[in-house]
Every structure is written in C-alpha cells, then in structure tokens.
Length: 377
Image (cartoon, rainbow, N blue to C red):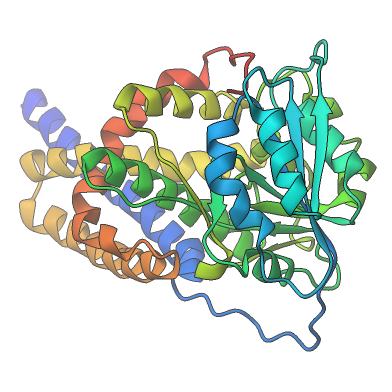
C-alpha cells in the first residue's frame, strides 16, 4: 500500500514540476519576448544626426578586413563619421592593407599597436585605445569579420540615441548558408538576441554583443572603462554592458538596415570553441542577471524531459494540453520575432531547433566553471 501511495506521489510531483516549468516559460514569453515580437519603434519628436566613430579591433585580420571594411567606409551618412581600425600587433599584412585603404578613404583612422598590455588579456586593451583615440562622443563597435547589412547602418544605429540614452543595442546576425550547422548557429544567435533585446525593451538590459553595439565615450570613462574586468579575456561587450546599463540609459534598434552580418563557423568544433569562450564570462554577471537569465535557461532545459516524464507517469491528456499551450504561444512569438530580425527562414525548423537547445545546454554547461582562455582570437 505504501508503495502505491509513493508511486502516486511521484506521478504528481513530476506533473507539478512540469506545470511549474511551463508556467515559468509562459511568463518569459508573455512578459518579455512578446516585446520584441510585436515591437514598434516609438516616433521621435526630434531627429538628430550625431557625429559617430566606428571602431574595429583587428589582429591578423587582413583577409577579413579586405572583404568587410569597405562596408563601413562607404556608409551613406550625411553627418560626420570616421572609421577607426585598431591594428593590434598583427603579424600578417593588416598594416599594409590599411595603408592602401587610407589612400582611398580619408575617413579611415588607423591606430597601430605594436605591444601587448601586460595583465590585460583579450580585446579590452586595443578597444580602450580605440575609444580613447575616437574623435566623436558616440562610438559604434563592430568586428573585423562583420559587415553592415546596409549602407544606412550608422544612421540607423545612431538614431537610437535620445535624451538620457547612453547605450544602443543592435543585432549582429550571421550570413545565411546551406546546412544544419548554419541553422543551429543562427538559431542560437536569434535565441540569444530574443533574450537580451527583449529584456532591454522590458527595462532590464543586461548585455550587448560587440558585433553591433554603441555607447557614449562619457559612459565609458565615467565608469573607468574596463578596469574592473581587465583581468578577464572576454567581457568587453556583455560584462561591460551588464555593469553600466540600467532601465533609463539603454535603447535598442531593431531594423534590418541596422544589422551587421558575420561569417559563421564552418565546423562544429570551431563553433563549440567560440561559444565556450563566450560563456566563461557569464559567471561574472550581476546576481540579478544570473537569476533573470538562469530561471529561463533552467526552465527551458527541463521542459522537454519533464514533458516526456509527465506523458508516461501522469496523464497524457493534461500533459499534452499544457505542451500545446506553450507550443502555440512560442510559435507565435518566434514567428513574429524572427520576422523582426530577418531570420524568418528558420521558422520552418524552429521546433526541431528548440528541442536541439536541450542538447546545446548540456554541451556548454561545463563552460560555466571553466577558466577563461587568455586570448581573444
């Protein structure tokens, strides 16, 4: 008899846990992710075009700069802008390539760094030097392997500034290629953007991506730059924004013309290496951010295992009903959000890719404890 009651109790516990996890998922979709899915930019009472300094850090990136740098240099922007490339101790032909570009583009500003900064691993030293050398108050950051999605990238991104705004978050997408790996990379990028852009729209910003990020020099220097995280290889984008962003000073720009495009990794192992390097900084987020992102991630990770357990151990009718409720809301949000971020071709695969995220979490879970790598390449 005791075994019978303990069996019943186990069934109920599994179903209650499934309901609780599903409720958390529904909360995030309704409280945050709908904000991106149904986003409509507010009409600005006044429009101003600010001078902008585009900053690109490069290290042995001659091939990438040859392809992508012209996209930043030929921007259609009526106001003043410069493109500042920080050549960080490159051993390839980067310096010679930049000198050739300089002959044709007077708006190109080159900073050559020939030494490493002792005790400051990663990209923070060259980026700090770039911000210091920038002529204009608004800096717009991207990478050597990124190209603006349109000639109006600068105009669109600087348009996010208004009274009190000191940070503008953009979307850094990846080029669309054939194959399952490309879909996995782009879906993970979309899923990450769904979170940080939605939370920012919900007045709870917590990160940005260096492929497409803008802030004011004043904010950078008033917070002593990267001084508190100089010992870490990464964090020049997400950790810095996590430190300085608040519910009043951050805005987002969601417009296909404001996106950047990067070349995705071509092998699964290279992608895993890249993501492991990124995730080693998440342990340094503010406690509030860890709870905010962690609750969603854990509930997402547990959703499918608990659904299967509930189907088997409890009632397939009730379990399926809850699953369909979450599935329907998720489909609507994903469809609209993918449309906003120009990733609509992924929608046909979203349900498979969402299941894949369970295995994604398993693969990258160890990176939360792994010691950060010292190089930024």
